[in-house]
Image (cartoon, rainbow, N blue to C red; front, side, top):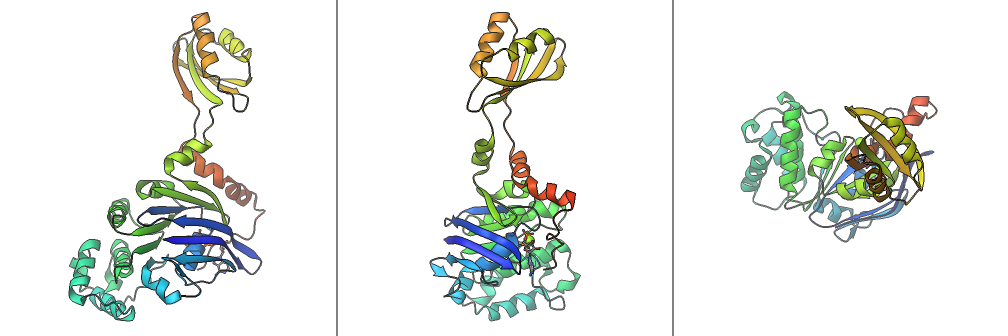
Length: 327
Ligand code: ADP
Ligand code: MG
């Protein structure tokens, strides 16, 4: 449904996007995850045709955004980072205004009723947008994106600034919309993305650094050669024996976790799986293994690891290009 090929974007000297490639199948919900300034909004603005790329191409439903911008816009409902709301219109006036602007051909009354029911804004239909809470404003923004029933929805940080209850409501709404739409949504918060997306694309400093299901991402980066093991037995003896095992690179004692039971972090050389040798060693010495697990990474670890360079460089103040976005 969406094909992004070799996409790059420069703002003057600043490279905001560096050769991004991905495609999105019809009917999936894809999460765009990355720290602030990663390039999420830039990518979304290019996909929706509101910004031009420096190089590369985007097609939506087979239409190239450059050659057929109007066709592409018809296929996409877009909720930008700052929804384009007119505060001195009522919700009704605003949605009717955009209905005309977008030249929607569906039966007006029925379509607007459906959208309002879906986004749960029917009870504020006659109120001024200016007087609505942030959560309601966001839902009016979503309603605007749904006008004309476009098959693709692009939602830029749809839950930013909402309280936890509103976040859950918007999340559920997006989840439901996902049944009939292809959705890309962005966030800098992992749990946000994890809760609704089948696939996660992580971008950092303009580069795509990971792309996969939440499970596959944490699996691909977890390491079989690092094991945490809890064994009953004298710490000195056990750690000495562990160090003496074949292919072991390092052993660290993590402390006494139960009386007489210590936990150890054991790292074997790359591509070595020490679990079977650990079992044999423990059995031979009668040191019961009470727990053994792969020191695998959670998705949170994966995200932090993949995007760590941005934070480290920020903290040292070496990077000056990442000023607050003004957008
Ligand atoms: P995100 O949405 O992931 O927070 P953006 O796409 O907004 O990131 O920004 C990516 C990079 O491009 C940042 O370094 C940002 O400062 C820069 N940038 C964004 N918009 C502009 C602009 N209009 N002019 C110059 N630089 C910009
Ligand atoms: Mg952004």
